[in-house]
Image 1 (cartoon, rainbow, N blue to C red):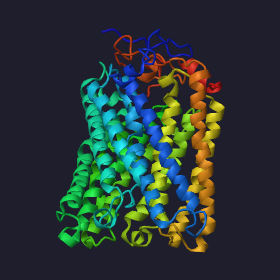
Image 2 (cartoon, rainbow, N blue to C red):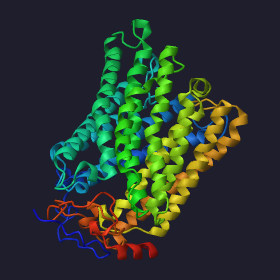
Image 3 (tube, rainbow, N blue to C red):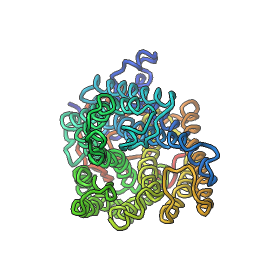
Image 4 (cartoon, rainbow, N blue to C red):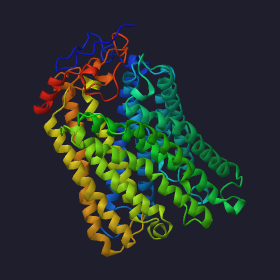
Length: 558
């Protein structure tokens, strides 16, 4: 096998005549494709639709809470709106966004492979995702579900007359998409790395997805079984969760959170992988403590399965069990703290360039730090009793998920947009959008920490008048945030049709994905790459033109 040309990483692109975008442009060729890059684009389009729908529901929530009275939505409708917002955002956006889009597109290229190990299964996972989403959307159009996205009993077993089972079926089907994607990633990473791509030369983005895939494989069947048991109880009246017929409602919470707390790491671990790429590459410096960050991803995946009980401190759970879960909740923060400390150490004395992806990376660190620290409050039993089911929970969750995963997703999308599309976007407008999103996010969710501390409960359409001022701030912030999130849609679309042609390596970086054309050829590389350099190697050994890299810092791309 011949080594791939590692020197062609300046501003001049080397796009071949045939790439994955123009290799057959019919609808049939896309719907039957086995190319991991095209499947990633299919996911990008479908996930974006669910994100938009979830955002519309969020807008109704914030408009209703603008005033203390329930004057826009009556209580039953409000229950459906916040449930459907949660279902769409958690199961159809947050969980699949980074793995299904960026992971699908980049993992084979980053390890020097031609595709994922099972291309047909990869396409099947997208069709399963679409089927699960279709069932869920049908239920929402028929009247929706009003149980909360957690489907707690007895709401989901006896009290609800909404389409619980249709939504549950959609989530059940969608779970198989996650399982197949995780299986595909694990086999690909184990068996298809290029010559010289050892485990400790892999990008941290790949390590993060490896850990995420383990959680997908081990955790997702649990939620599938839980939904199946819920269906059996509703249809066959078998006493599983409903105490009226001999069931145990606490059992549902144990099963649900045994999956759903690790699912938090399905959402956030890929984002951490993106941020590791951004921090190192835009600091022009090898990441500090590579091995610690890599193994911390595995540690998070393992410990994530041991802390589900901290969601149940007020459920009647044994005080001794709660003490154990409280302790483990503090322990699971250590691997996340390792990442934050190492990212900060990487920035120290680095040649930092504040391009748009780096802004998202820095915003991620700040917002995730707030989300993580407030999570420790909720892991302390005394504080949790006061804060449970208040807006403090809502703020904490969104600081981790939106301030964390969504900003990491946007950072990764901006970082690899030129590689995905072969076009450059407006750096000016993208920086403006990043700033607007950051301001709008904090204005939306920081007041909710105060509201929660003051005792405002979540999931209510009305509230005491003394909470209105902070709710007005939150709704105003949501309007600003919505504008910021719409801006990338505009300038990304513009870039596809009118953007400048992207070079192979616009950022002048050493990773394998930057050593192929933009967009990549169908089989990713014209020749099989042989990796002889370490990850994040900014020395001559990586083949990187250091003089061009220094010029890149002095003259950022427009």
